[in-house]
Image 1 (spheres, rainbow, N blue to C red):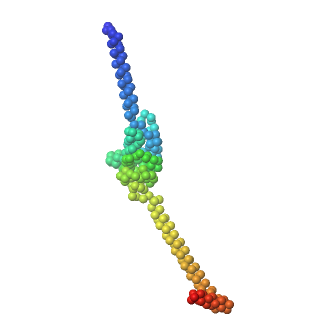
Image 2: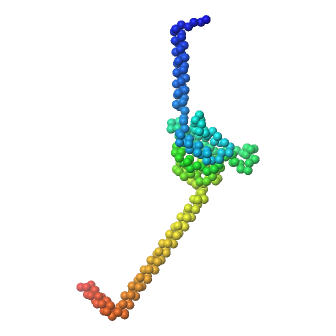
Length: 238
C-alpha cells in the first residue's frame, strides 16, 4: 500500500483547494457577466403578452420564472451594461405551410389585438419589429413608438396612426370638425360685421335727421345753431 509523505499530502490539498477556488471564481465571474433584465421592462413585456392574442404561442417563453431572465425571452435583446431592453423582434412568419393553407386567414397564427399603451414607456428601445402580424387600432401615443419607421409595423393593415400615413377613423374626423369650427367662426364674424355696419348706418341716419329736424322745426335750436356757426367762423378767421 502506497504511503504519502507530509509534503505530498500538503501539495495534494493545495491543488484541491486551488481547483475549488478557481471554479468558484469562474462561477462568480460568469454570474456577474450575465445580463439581468430590468424589472420595469420585464413588467411591460409581460403586460404586452397578457393584452395581445397569441394563438401559436410565440410568447410562450415570456414568463415571470426567475430562472429565465427576460433578456433570454424570444425576440428580446438587452444592453449588456444598462440591462434595459433595446431590441424587440416579433415579426410573424407568413410562409404558408399546409396547416396555414387550411385556414381561412393565412395569418391566423400571428399576434392579434391592439398594441398596449404601456409599450410607449420602453424608453431604451432602439429596434422594433412587429411586422406582418394582425395588430389593429391606433399605435400608442408617445415619442418612443411613434419614432420608429413604417417598416416596424409593415404588414399590419389594420394598424393606423403615426408613424404610419394611414389615419385612424377618430383622427379623420378631427380635420373636418376643425374646418367646421373655422367656418362657424367665420360665419359668426361675418354676422357681427354685418350688424356693426348696419348699426353704424342707422346711428348716422338717426343723428343726421335728428339734428336736421331740430334745425327745421325748433326755432330756438335753429337760432342757437346758426349763432354757434357764426361764432365758430369768426374764431377761425381771426
